Image (tube, rainbow, N blue to C red; front, side):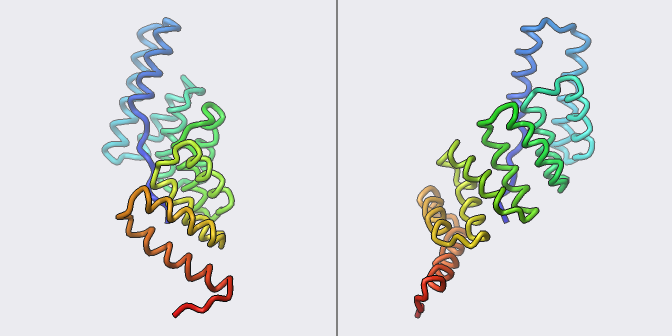
Length: 192
């Protein structure tokens, strides 16, 4: 199972909100309502009221449909609600708006993995690793996905990189051993 999702980008959404309204000079009443929706969504998310958070992000997106971080945040909430198809749609939309969004690639990969679409998961985790080669969770999830795709040779490579980044990652030690066993079986090598 892949590592957990990343939390919504609260500060980024707030700063983007401030920038949009500072540049556009949007009326205060509109700005206050939008800001209230964001605060409501964040508060609900932090308190575990996920349906309420999802609805507040949806309302905010009716006002600002092209704000990547809002779409992303709603995707995270959908993921946490185990609405993986909806999460994938939101993460995909986030990537249309911001193609190098690490969290959208990473979490869309998690959603694809949980839906057992390992080919799509591998593509997303590979892209996440391209964006941030030092992220241990993305590297580990890529390796796990490659193992599920039975690409044991490449899984071993990625598990090694994950272990170089975090030598204490117990799951990676266990899984690299499994990948080595499967690779030996594929090559016809008998292990002691």
